[in-house]
Image (cartoon, rainbow, N blue to C red; front, side, top):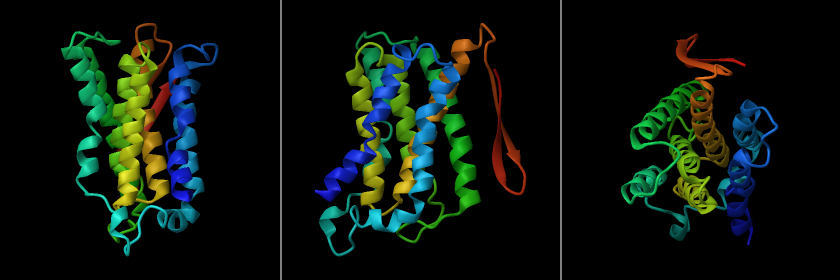
Length: 235
C-alpha cells in the first residue's frame, strides 16, 4: 500500500491539471508565471526531500527482492514515446498546434535548453547514484521524458486532455523505472521532471510572444568555476 501511495504521489496529478488549465482557467495570470509555476514546485519538492532519499528508495528498490528491479534499457526508449506520438498523430492526419517543421524546431530547442540545464547541474552537484555511480542529480532520463510529454501537451493537449494525460503518465513511468532500477533518487526524478517541463514551457512561451516582443528570452552557456548556463528574460 505504501508503494502504491508513493507512486501516486510521484505521478503529480496536479501538474497534469495545471498544464491543461494553462490555456483556459488562468488566462489572467502572466504567462511567465504559468510557465514556471509547475516546474518550480517539482524542483522545490525534489530539493526538499533530499534528506529522505534513502528511506524513499527502499520502497522502489530492494537488492534482496529481484521483483522490484526493471531492465535498465526500458526507460531508454520510453522517454521518447511522447515525441513519437506527436509525429504519429501528424502522420495520421491529425493536425497539431504547429506544422511538422515548426514543431520539430520547437522540440529541438526544448532539447537544447533541457540539456543546458541538466548537464551543468550533474557536474556541479556530482551526487552519487543509489547504485554507487556518479552524476545522479538531476535525472536526465526523467527530464527528457517530461520535456517530451510537455511537447505532446503543447501540440495536442488543447484538442484532447487524454493526450496530455498519456504523455505525463509515460513520463512518470520513466522516473519510476529509474528508481526501480536503482539508478536515481526521488529528488533526482522530481527535479528532472521540473526541468523537462520548464524547458519546453520556456521555448513555447518565447515563440508565442516573439512577434509581439512582449517577452524576450536568451539562454547561453557559461563557465564560472565550472560549466553552467545563463538565462536572461526581458518582460
